[in-house]
Length: 310
Image 1: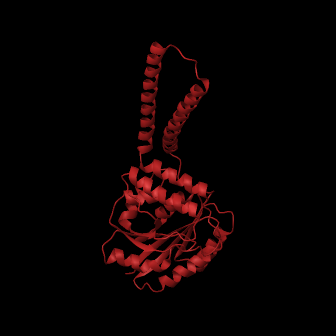
Image 2: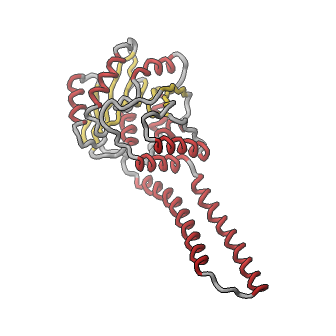
Image 3: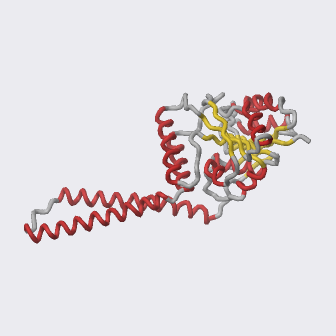
């Protein structure tokens, strides 16, 4: 009996890429004699004709193409989660619709699971050719920082593009948290994972919806979700400031007793006040970030809302 591979494809304003993606994957699917493909396109509140393209594909390939359309834009993490919940295949793959994730790697991924015994075969880029240098620099720094302060290892250059067994997918679905960071979740659940390396691929069509600021906020969410170190840093800054202030106070008292009370230095006093105030705001901001995450979790809102599904 042929095994089913469910492919989850998050889409946000990707009307040009969807038909090209389907055609490219179908070429690979034709070479898979023991497997069949099940598509789950997730329309993440697109404002273009992405949903129309999904409907057209579903009409022409009713047995294999499915789609989920959100009531609004909930973000890629919500789209991934919706796809994982809907997928019914023996294996589940996550792919970007812009073909920066090469479909040609699918046969090798299947071999990694069925013959080599891995639970997951992921991918990682060895180069970032074509990306703005500033984005590449901060991406490398993100992986360096999060792997230093978190117990969950996230492979540098790892993509969401991966093929997973049903057992691993079921484990991921048990993590129903509202604040999701899939790269960390994929690693946190464990399971034996192998990574295939490839060079960066250009988008087949359209433009990316990820801005530098969006990626920066996403990286902060990843750090907060999988590490408590920023809270420890805030505590250390507070303790260090207290020690410095205490030593400075002792020094001022001793100097006044020995040399008398010198003329007060207003500029230096204001500078110290601003510095201490800035440190306090920094610490409050770090604590506030964690409290904000807790606030979103305890409200227990749904991760996404489905408007249409087929």
